[in-house]
Length: 363
Image (cartoon, rainbow, N blue to C red; front, side, top):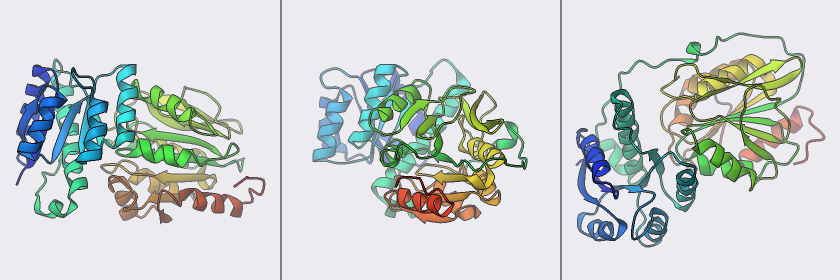
């Protein structure tokens, strides 16, 4: 049976466009649309959809209020559809906290290439959302395999071995679907003297700055959107800006950030593979690589490079992942030292740091 989708949006044009995209895939079908949450409430009862797409800002009842009621009374996978504004970004991030599975931005209806990429992103997330609700159906549903050629990190920077004149530790983290909440949980446990941390979370422009500000207000460490050429300091986390690769570089004995507009890698910019390769190049055995929940395989090849360079590598386990895609691929490729739950990740990290002689690191 195809995945049944209910589209909720106050724009008739967006409802029509999303319906056309979803119905173009053989394994999913729009069973209904609704212009607002009040109509949607009745259609959920009548149509019993597997997945909802939900606009953020709507009349009569906004997306957040509806989502909160839905998750309390009838939990189901919801993909938020958000516009690229600072206000919408904050609302969307709050929706993820309330239980939304993931989000996509409003489609750009005037650019054919963007629309093709958008359709791929939307339908991939619908598939993952449906499996999150009922994983027992996944084996029965034949999913089309992508044959698109994907760039590797070679498209942005070469792999190279360097001599390391410092023992300063650095942490590199990659995540995607479910990563906003996983990162919040992890970073909230980090003490002010933890190693500098670079993060690539698959997220569009405008969202990353809002996300970084949100985390900065919740954590003991400082969290910010990364800028080009700034020194990486202990007790700080730097999040890759949307649509730019984040890389680790060196200036003398110091670690510094580097941003790149290079081509997408593993279909993403920013790409986890690019961050992990740069960390393998610049930090080697002084690095910790962490791959968290997410769709696809971005980060798997880069984590193997970090592992081979002597870094300590961790993958989030299946039980604590929203989507066990990126960690699963990294494990299968052989680049993971330990598979741990999100809750246990800080303990493993602190134990490794203590074993490396970081006696003054306050656990």
